[in-house]
Length: 446
Image (cartoon, rainbow, N blue to C red; front, side, top):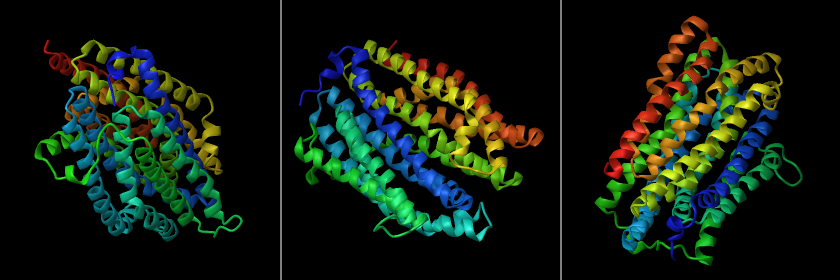
């Protein structure tokens, strides 16, 4: 299949054609996260707290899968741009093999380690039991999640965004439909409570995986995935993990941050931990669509860089910046204007809603400026520069954020933790701007 449309089509229509299907599917994913949490919250506040505590571990599974998939995506796009079909085929094939290994590894780590992990943040038997009920089911789908996400990144690398959107939305919609049926036992379905939420999530992921396989069989990908090309290659491993390793850490860092912040906030009561968990559910409405923009531009950046079309690379990431800033502006507006309504989706306790309203208004002040560092990170990954992208994320999630939150919380309590979010975003935006342009100048050979 001819992939030259990536360097021949006009930039704005090209970016929109690649990014909008991903933005739409990520918006549906956001809706799934909200609906999933909404039904769990109807069980009890303890159930919602348990889900909030499991979230960092669940996010780590996604981080490993998506991070490695980004490495596969970037290298396939680069090799196709450089007209090296054999290396593109080998990258795709080995990507599937390693994703199976990652899934198996995560499955055993989380099944064995979750009771200890949850026990670090709650001493309440009811919350601990509900968290274990959920995690003991949802992590059995780790291999399916890992392989399915790698397929997703391969489809994206070759520009098959519409099929990717359909596959992802099939999974999300299935999850949304099954949630109330399996949680509350509607009609012929058994009442499974927290286990029902986990089963619904897993079944959506299974359907997504089989949809990718179906589309590959119906219309074969322009890269050949075969057992004969799965033998690990040192060159490919170095290239894929060179981007995928930092990208994985990039995406895992929010889990580390949430865990650290849960420890800080638990001093003031579990209500603050719950509010943080609700915030991270709500912020998916903003950050997942921006992630959709990045998913759309990564293969374009990689392909055009491989083809030495540097001016097009610049036009691509600049237009992506406009799109992400627009999404973040809308998110900030929602958090500033209707925070009580947003919090009431997941909580009925007036104290929880009041604390959450303050948190949303403060945290959202950093949304718009964060578009800068988010877009630069995605562009760097598309260029095959995983480590610089990781450094920017380390600044956001650990190096700046955690010390600032600790410092401000000493004098201002939990409000200091909320203020640390926008303070961090402004600092990271400045650093990422300086960092990116220095690297891009070197990449162009200037």
